[in-house]
Length: 379
Image (cartoon, rainbow, N blue to C red; front, top):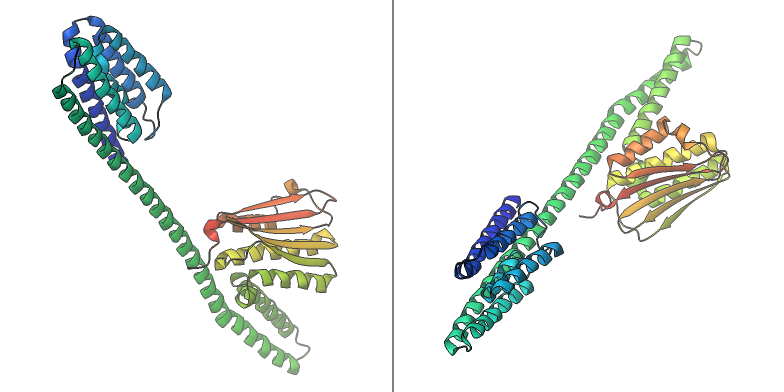
């Protein structure tokens, strides 16, 4: 597309140069003065400044160019009225992009040519009118053709840009789906191998301990097996949050706040706002993990009385807000903390953001947001 644009610019420059020569060569030779040559050269240089040294976007009309070109054209007309048609050269850069400007240029030049003929000869023949009309119609058809080609190319470029954006969004979605599928596979493999193995080892050690209750090494081995069993289950839950498979993100958040209330006595509840829409599996999992980490921080540090989890479905993003009225903290000092870093990394991996607002004695608010590219789970 860029090579086509360069080619279009070259044709525009050739169009300008040819029309400038065509419309000014005859009058310059007839007048036989130096000033018209200087003004025509100035018009060519003025065009080069605005359209060769710099390339304004298609359809843009630089007002300084129009004013400067118009003044040079008026200077030529003041010398000799036969320079009337040079007006078309001034407006040539817009004949390919702006249909109305091109048609105005054609009509102005046709009218100016007839006026010049009348001024020179005192009358206009029907033959001159017919020839001028035919030339004007041909020029108008050329302007319309150039405009249609430029418009079609612009529409094609827009379609290509939309296609590229759709392909990029699809690639991101496929990559996220692949990551989610791999996490699911790892969760199944760990559950079916390590977790089941540790469970079997723990059961065998419990049976052995029943016959040898005072064996120190047996007791230590059983404790290690139970710890590793719990750790493998934690890894499986981290890879594949079971709540999401069962009920989806809104209900998983409600259960999370419900468990917090039941286990600690904190007044915790979940609020859902906006029109619900399905999310990508990975986006749901990461938002849930952020909520779990924020709630875990409340349990350990906040000494809060109230906690509110708010999930907001907006037009172009989804926002999770976890607010507590606890002791608060200095976000600057806590920014390097492992938990906050993990939450921030989770959001950034999906193109989202994580904000933490808090102050000592003023509670804390964790805000996680994901953009539209990570949201739609429907295909």
